[in-house]
Length: 154
Image 1 (cartoon, rainbow, N blue to C red):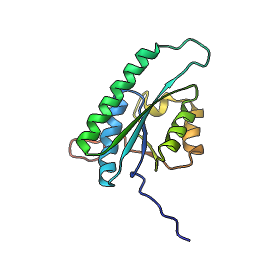
Image 2 (cartoon, rainbow, N blue to C red):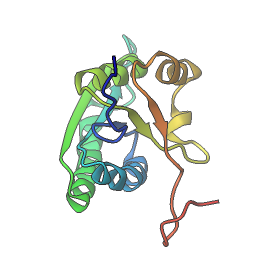
Image 3 (cartoon, rainbow, N blue to C red):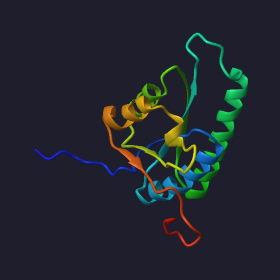
């Protein structure tokens, strides 16, 4: 029996950590999603302290999420793709991302690492392990960026 395999970029989930990450991730992923005739879901996870005081107020963190979602909406409009946004509050960021991917029926979890304190590095080794080893769908790491002519940075 042959199983139908959908393109990775038909319904990907893009976790967004901050404004820079949102701009870079959307710029790299949305053209690929458009080429696949797909739609995107983006998720921002507000990490709860699990009993300890949170570093910022809920209102401050929701304002950051609104900014990230605005960046993603503009990029989706420019790329001509549909976009779903998802804001989550969780003590376990990895579980929240995996749950969001399952609920969105995502074909992949897609992100971009960057130098220095990258999105990838924002998470502990346990979260990286969770995303890569425990996801029931592909995890796609896109190139860190492109130059003006569309080629990969070196």
